[in-house]
Picture 1 (cartoon, rainbow, N blue to C red):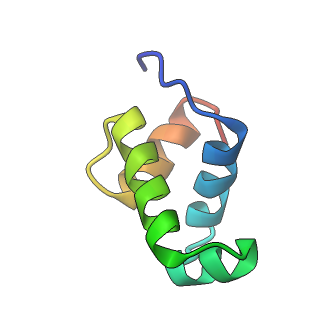
Picture 2: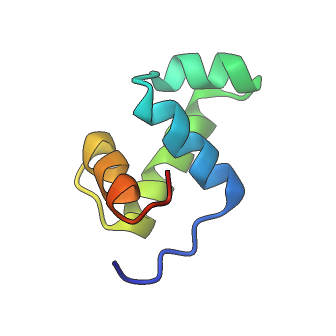
Length: 66
């Protein structure tokens, strides 16, 4: 996998996604606006060159990020 430049927050977000959490639930847990969470998820997918959230989690697992 190419260099992905994931931050600790990105990895935490992937952890939530790996548990099947929605953006709404993540936002509630973090006390953040849903729009921000959605933008952050989109940024993580872009860093991993993932097609969707599930693909991002799979790539993170394969790369031993999670």
